[in-house]
Length: 295
Image (cartoon, rainbow, N blue to C red):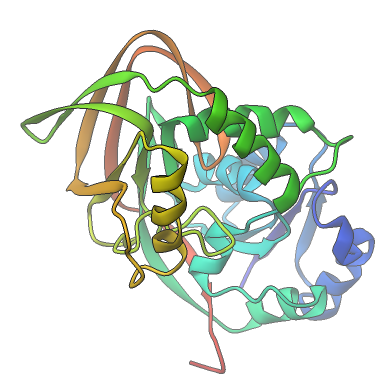
């Protein structure tokens, strides 16, 4: 298989990813390997590899780098592969990619199956896992501001989330979805193609990458006590003490707000004004899913 690797050198430092190229050459000696040099570079590189007839482009990085590649691989015959090097690794967990040593993460891609995945679109841009607005979009923007010079990971994300929760003012939004109209005062409004953000936080436990739908999950504004009782259900769906969310299967939606607002696609912060348009693009991208124990 004609394969290229796109590596974000700023990801996975705790795994000793300075020698990731050696691991790749060990298991994929004929593959082409390129390092990203700036934000948006993965999108440019993936476009070139798809144009040049590569059968697979494997992205070593976080969800943001993967999302860049998705923009160029959608609608092509080039399959997306993933080596998880991010903080939460939500997509990688959904694909069954191992999260052990760097050696395990690379070698697992020698055994795979190709699946056809749906993609979501938010204001014209693709997302493979999640898009949303509300508090989570504010958190994504603040987390992005940490940048390469700051400490990223679960604990900084938690601290940012806690600050966002106590200072967040829930907006009233109107959503038109497949002929139905809703009004919500939201904490977060999520459009899920996959099930989880990362670290097994499953925002939409029944979402599927190939069902032709997005799961629109509405997290209602709750006080801290109700939130504390409701949060465990996102990690353990069978443990639902208090419900703080509603989920609807949709194909498209228009979300209306007054004025500028923040949203995200696969954790990458974006800015919109007045309206966010969401739709599903069925069977839009090929994806390499790692086999587990030879299955």
